[in-house]
Amino acid sequence: MTVKTNKIENKFEEITKVKNKWCLCDENNKKIIFNFCEGYKAFLSENKTERECCKYTISQAEKHGFKNLTEYIKKKTKLKCGDKIYAVNQNKSIILFVIGSEPFENGLNILGAHIDSPRLDLKQNPLYEKNGFCLMDTHYYGGIKHYQWLTMPLAMHGVVVKKDGTVININIGEKDNEPVFYISDLLPHLKKENGNQEILGEQLDIIVGNQTTKKDKESEIVIENLKKILKNYEIEEDDFISAEIEIVPSGKARDLGFDRSMIVGYGHDDRSCAYTSLKAILECEKPKRTAVCLLVDKEEIGSNGATGMKSRFFENVVAEIINLTGTYNELTLKRTLTNSYMISSDVTAGFDPSWASSYNIQTDAFLSSGLSFNKYTGHRGKSGANDASPEYIAKLRTILEKNKIFHQFTEMGKVDQGGGGTIAYILAEYGMNVIDAGIPLLSMHAPWEVASKLDIYHAYLFYKAFLKDMK
Ligand code: MN
Ligand code: MN
Image (cartoon, rainbow, N blue to C red; front, side, top):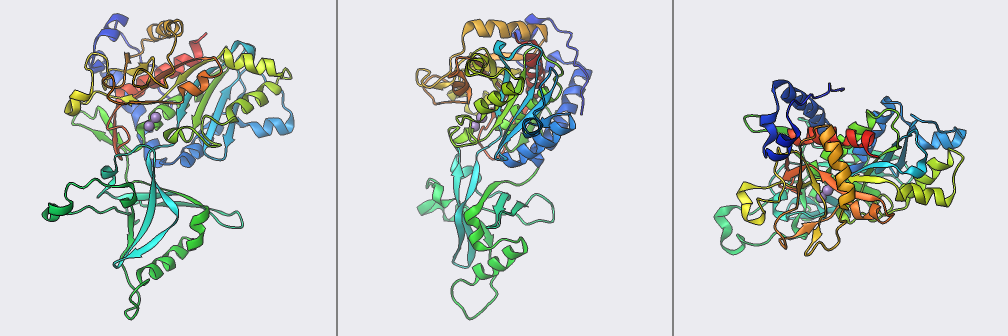
């Protein structure tokens, strides 16, 4: 879906001073924002794992003329300005490039978001029977409040890889005629002993069956039926060993509020920034500096592993790209990375009136106030933060003003209340300039999170402007 330019009539001073910026939008602006968010809602509803997001990105990239890096390498095609390339890492992270007219050494303009979200993962030997129920054992992924995952319909997304290498895609619990899964909670009537008990990670097992097939056997009777049913999905019990199955909330992203100004959805963190960053690079044509969009996995558990930001994948792919111009050497690669500018596109905490005491009303991000820039994140005295330099921020202010982007410069909660991190510090290790800029959320990391449509749209506008104008 292409979107017409959103012409904003307001003065820049108004944009920086007004908190809730819907009042700065006329009916036409609102229509464009709402229209854009229809595409986002569909994306969020359909793509609930990093693999699904990666697959979606490949299909969108190919529609927009991007070609797989492996094709370029195989055919030894020489790169030229305007070429569009993507590189996939184990089907779970992906990088897109639009080659610019300037030499690589001048640096890249990089947008980086993550496509993994907090969830429950099935263990490798999940299936068990207890008191007539069949359950599956999970291990949660990322920072969750355990109790939030109880008593709601859950869906199962992922892959099972058979011994012969065949990949079976699993997606159960999204369509109306499909079953869902469930984690139970204690009824309030029986709360005396266990009513205020903390929910432990080990308790987060999903109910998957309750039907017996034999009346004479006392144990293993539900599980036998379950194993039979799993065969309909071409899954044998042993196959869970080589599977990656994610338990996520079942259902679609929906408009929130009578005014429909917000969206309730699973995985706004960080697919709201991933979608808007992807849109920005898909629409990027012949930039001066080479434009890059990183969509990575494993951010929620520390960016480790082969598909996380800490892996060498990004650096290696940049080396391959430079090599395709015939000018590769180690120094060119190092200069390219050091001279790059990066936006770590990741969500932040939006001020929540129901939990006001954890926030600083003066300095925290508000929903509908625009894209939120965090100079630093980190915990307790900025520990672990990438602290963006004011020289870099000054350049970004020029872009914000030129493009009339709705934005805010913020922190994440009161000092010493907690904290957070993104992939920002990892790219900063190359010596490049990096800053966090993302969409503020309510209930971050809950099964259903909340974002403002206005913020989503202005994130997209900024990311697009950054790829084009940052120099
Ligand atoms: Mn995030
Ligand atoms: Mn997160």
